[in-house]
Image (tube, rainbow, N blue to C red; front, side, top):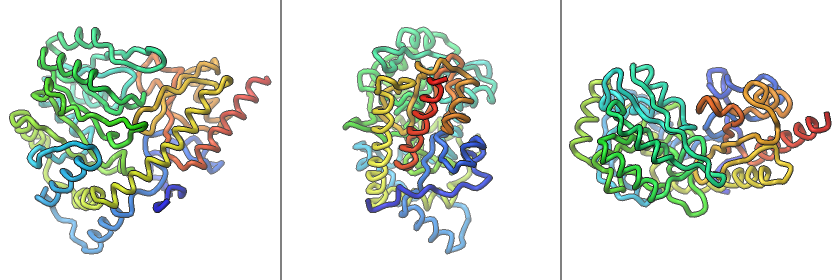
Length: 393
């Protein structure tokens, strides 16, 4: 490989993933598979771009430029096969910042949002902090994969207080990449009931087996109500940088969102974010992503084969996109704190417990596949050994 996907990036005590890593795992020198961020350094093209900016010593206010727009347009065309227009681009201070902006724009205090379950918990957290409600729409497990329950979703959309639906594509934590048929049905309901759809597509470049993350804005039926969020966050291991780009084709909606963003005290682009976009959205950045997908794709293969064994301790839902795996621990007869303790203490495998994604999921965990292949192999070996010891007791 041309790039380094074998070195574990150093994490200081200030790093959130470091703080979340259980002491036994940290002391043993193993990587944590908690948190959806990668363990290896970001693309060299970003590091060079940011380094050049730092060496210039100018950290003043930055604004979006035609060159910046060109890079974003180029990236969407080459990385996502998506033709966008420069005027659609609205820079924001991160994904959840923009979720909060959409919530303020679409709802009043006491009104609410709709989120699928299991689902990323920061959406509901943002609503709660803003004095809004969250209506949960449980997804259905059908033939070993998740599907949206459109009958339940329509019931919730028909309730006048629910003004905004939070879509995640590829879905975190289940790994689904939603089909055109599914997105079209969602758009039909959105248009019928006047419910806006915020599509979090920050994992969009990470798909497998020839799948493509269909930009929600491409679905004609829902375009009038469509807000798409893109960022470097997941694709380039940039989760700690507060920056994203919102893409809104509908001019009226874009003006409303931009007005709300300004009212939320958005000032300007951080110079670090500007330099990062200019370094990431390049031929070299795209080349790095292609190699990154080979690495996390190998981890996906290892995990899929491990959990497909007859004696596997659980079921790994198909990972169609993203680098997180959603595991239901059918074979351990453990849940909640007991499951977490077994994984942390016995297997030295740090995973995120499923209740972070919804109350009923105490027999589930989320596993990051964004580590080195070597660390993933070691983690699965430790898990097998711990399960064997448990079965012999």
